[in-house]
Length: 295
Ligand code: G1P
Image 1 (cartoon, rainbow, N blue to C red):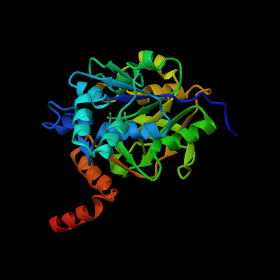
Image 2: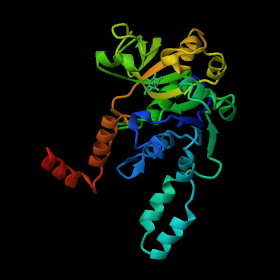
Image 3: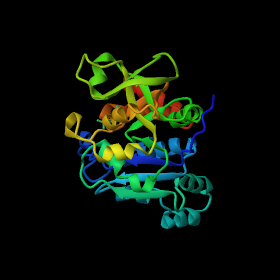
Image 4: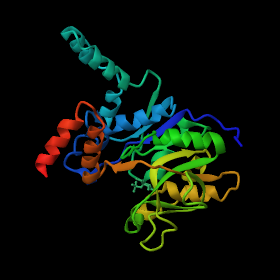
């Protein structure tokens, strides 16, 4: 049965993180602007959200992140130069397709690095009283269908709150938020428990929270009073656990069947570059030949 649900129009993208795992590359440049093939990581994530019908993008930024705002703005100088050179219609179209339109973006600052829960809370006034999507830009989801679009389908059917999950090896569960589900084989299943970074050997399953969420706005009230949790940070997962106690706030896990690359880590970032390039007709054959030479 299809529940009556409120449309998801807005996405929150927390981009205030310092990128310490990627120093010195991220000393002066935001980690979200690191390049995967020929687009910054953040562009790939915005494209995923657009493919799911998102209309407004709320960036929770910090110091040194101004270039993200510039990236989504028109560059008149670049457009004029390309036009003057002639025959650049394809490049111009590509540049303009990547833009977000006037009024489609909001930027707010997380002034102190107090954790993901705090970053999301910083978006409360801009999101207002409506359900929203949340995408953690470090995590590139690479699959047959965009992850958030799959989640929208599940949301339109069930309503409530949705979290994308995927299995990790048992010795990795302590690095993530982990959920327990009613049916571990189903594409969409009701969540029975959640815990942020459980000590090794205590996880309720091996399904990790991959960084894509659809949340009801009541989460903001809980985040406002959330005490610090794992790692001394204000954790989103802790507020979700409290919210799930309310029977009017069901939580569903949506399994993502593609690959996930953590672009905040060196290995994840390098692998993402290869995987995304191998998808490209203009690069795949030559890249394969080069890789074969290297290894
Ligand atoms: C955050 C979330 C965690 C999730 C992870 C995915 O953790 O708190 O539940 O599994 O993102 O990347 P962080 O990576 O910020 O430590």
